[in-house]
View 1 (cartoon, rainbow, N blue to C red):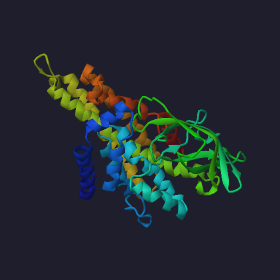
View 2: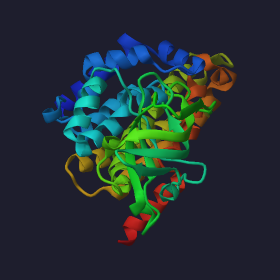
View 3: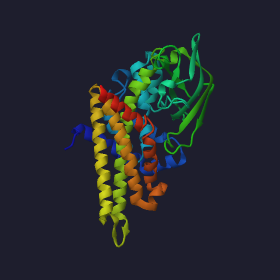
View 4: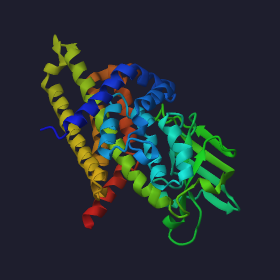
Length: 380
């Protein structure tokens, strides 16, 4: 049974063809090896209209739905989750601006984003605020017509890239509940007082993960997104739901890429005078890999469809993110086992899938956090 409409299948197929014909796995691999952002592909994606997909028509976009976005992320990630995040990740934050930005903020940032001129990294975590996002300590103090920010942010992917405009969660008040004192600011990475240092992480090599130091960073008051105290709802609520659907779709897409590569290798690799696919142990590994990947994909589609319809789907989104991330980790590990020593080489791509699989159960909310969310929703 195919759960996609003919239009949805055509859309997904068009992204598949674009990745293969206009980008190619060699380019994606090289960006990862060199730890450089895929600027050329990002610009091509803008020309194709991918950055416009979910931006409302009133803001100059195409007004597409979350399901179409999830299908796009799935196709973009076949040769690496990092590539999907590089191309489609800024959409998470662009939607924050579309939903909560002032007319002036939308005018300043959405058109250049849709043209591929700027990116939107998101900065939530700090040394003392990972899964406990509400523990953010970076401060923003109002001084007349501007704010002054001081503190340190961590694990912000893409903050140091050319044209990056950071959406940052900071504390504007210590009164009341911790969540109530958080606000979101729009901060170009060229702002004086910012020091952005790249981190040599296991994954996110082409997006480039960073840590950020803020030393009396002066931000005009009109760079506040929403109102003071809205930060938790904007970023930890709406943003994370969309982000988790997108990354879950990307994990499912990359898991399928891992299965395809392992299957191709098993059919070509000859040992003991026959392709290793003929050994039952290999066939059974591949059968398990494909079954898990299909199950992950269906969980993603369910969550994306519910979100597109505006239904409450906090549990379903966490289930999709949890299962898809652990599936990518599992199938890439089995893919490495099937490919043996060849799988450990960058040229095989499987070692990249394996690295990204290890990161997938941590970023955008750990597997433990997803299980906590699921249990909370089950409790009612």
